[in-house]
Length: 85
Image (cartoon, rainbow, N blue to C red; front, side):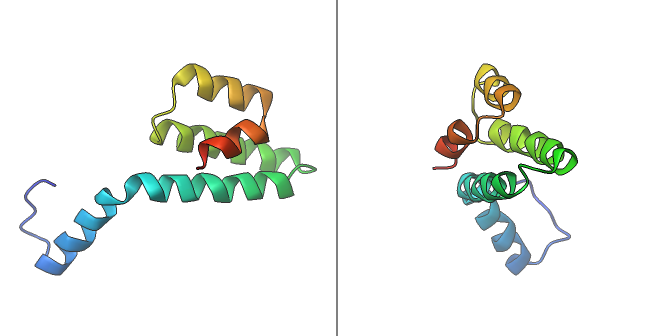
């Protein structure tokens, strides 16, 4: 983490822990999106918004761009859930 004189030592520890656990947080977010997408199968507008969020979450997890595009274009919930770990 960059030097941030405006943060207290407690705040610096919170920020450090966030970045240490960022991968598991992204995986949890993706798992929540899988659940939300399953529940929103009948709502096209909500589903489209959630798939955009899923694409961003996959990119944040370091999934290859070709795989992200394939999963999102096919709207493959099974493949998406496999990346949620």
